[in-house]
Amino acid sequence: MDWWRGLTGLMFFLILPSNIIGLWWVVGSPLTFDRNAICRRSKKLRGSSSQRDVCRKEPEVVEKVVEGTQIGLTECQYQLRYSKWNCTTVQNSVGKVLKQADTRETAFLNAMTSAGATYSVTQACSMGDLVQCGCADRPRKKKNHGTSEDKNDDLEGTWEWGGCDDNIEFGYSKSKEFMDAQQKKRNDIRTLITLHNNEAGRTVIRMNMFRECKCHGLSGSCTLQTCWRKMPSFRKVGNLLKEKFNGAAKVTGGNTGEEIIPEDSTVKFPTAADLVYSTDSPDYCRPNRKVGSLGTHGRRCNGSALDVGGCDILCCGRGATEYEFTRQEPCRCRFHWCCDVQCDTCKTTQVVHICNGYDTTPRKS
Ligand SMILES: *[C@@H]1O[C@H](CO)[C@@H](O)[C@H](O)[C@H]1NC(C)=O
Ligand SMILES: *[C@@H]1O[C@H](CO)[C@@H](O)[C@H](O)[C@H]1NC(C)=O
Image 1 (cartoon, helix red, strand yellow):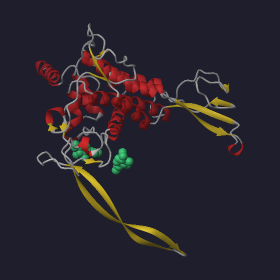
Image 2 (cartoon, protein in one colour; image 1 turned 45 degrees about the horizontal axis):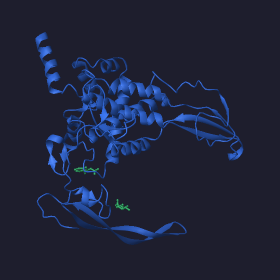
Image 3 (cartoon, helix red, strand yellow; image 1 turned 60 degrees about the vertical axis):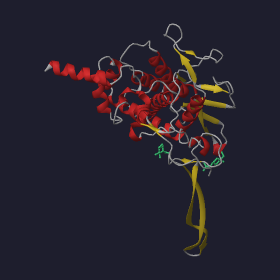
Image 4 (tube, helix red, strand yellow; image 1 turned 90 degrees about the vertical axis):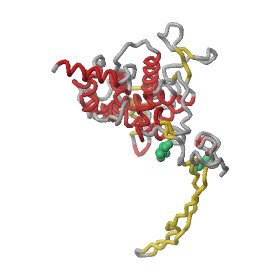
């Protein structure tokens, strides 16, 4: 039955576009966030050897990577909650966006999920959840007297390193091993862009490690502090990557096709933490199954904002309809001794704007 196995292998090869790396394992329907399914798939696909190795040797790490990509996806949904494409997984939208050529949205997804994987693995190390890793080694000298590696250091007095330093290098390398795993050659532009954006996600965490301290000494006197290196919160990572998303650089393959350069030569060269894309996004105004657009009909918009979440932009000029909701809530509660609480009932009115559909004549709300 070898021919049969070969054939199914070939089928997989043909079904999945070979140049999809990074999140290739969630592409296709339904989204795969199950370690076993991912590892089964990576076994069937020849070539993605580092991913296969991690799957075989370190299933617990894969579990954390997968958890991390979900954290990344959830944060993507938060960050794009006012955008036309809101990172939804409904109708496999995320999978379809990943299959598109490299748009800003693809860039954001790749960066966010590879950051999520870095974050989740690193955190697992600090929590002692993985046998492979623990807190980071601390080669620095133990006592510090107001001196440290941080440039704008505002710590005064004596502090020393103590507690658990987040092992960012371990999380970084596992995320890289898994997310950068690829099936084919490295020199097509699409691969370069994906790898760049994956790296940007990891870099943003690495560059924003900070020192957290705790005071000791007589009731808050803080005569001694212990400090440790900590990752930024994932919300902060999301905020930073959202800024990179807004300022993403459009790039091309250059002359050799082996490096990416800004399309507009007056734009400064993207750094490792910047996001890059090569294709303009579809407008996401109307439903288009092929590109993963669900349209913005029925989306809630902000009647007064002029930016992305405002009705003008979010509803793509179709206008919005205003709805008024009245809610009754207990209010002005008083406590009577003993033990009775009396409240009035208050009515609050909330105005909500909802984007119109496609066949209504545009009207202002
Ligand atoms: C995201 O957009 C889709 C359709 O465009 C909508 O159904 C969904 O409710 C939105 N999700 C959020 C969290 O706004
Ligand atoms: C709508 O936008 C305005 C101005 O940007 C902002 O102050 C307000 O909080 C927003 N309202 C909602 C419900 O998001």
